[in-house]
Image (cartoon, rainbow, N blue to C red; front, side, top):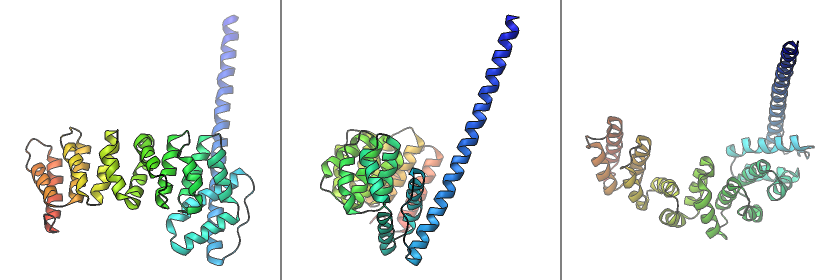
Length: 287
């Protein structure tokens, strides 16, 4: 009798759990689908406002506010100049900018602060610099890096020392944020990137900085890339080969010749170095 009761209770619990899981899945699918529809509608609203210069009503509720910010992130990469400035003005008139700044400064939850830092940073608006400067001291590393990147994109370098400190300490928190922040630093203050490359405490940070410097054809990148050639990780060596080729110059050619002719290396790495060497020589890269 006791065994029968236990079986019934266990079976009931399993059924309840399965029902809860099914309900949760249906709720998530509905929420995501509903949010995507709102984002699509917001994109259309913003596009119409840009083309026909119609006003954008302030969104009601957190979900619609978030949808408008997500729509902004989808549209901004496609806009330049006057259109970008016009979109910023529309978001400001709709109260979205103020809402995002409040979230960045005051939200107790980390994900709203991250979203706000990303969305505001895409605007490249100098008026937002005070919010980003405050964000450099946020308790979340990803928010700090996003705010550092935003300041570099404006560019606003009043707290450059703190920006470099954030990139040195927090750069490994999120690879995509890190890569874009280093590119922004290279564009805004290339000598500061060289400084970070030499002084960073983390070998990984020096490596990322070296790759960006290589894309800028800065010879300061070569020592770190030369060291990377000694790594046993083929992916790291391949990145080093690409970086050396991007740097160019006689030293880069000599390094590539050494890799291409090293019989102890993997064939794929030798072939890659050979292709990059041929490309450099064809372009007069040894000059």
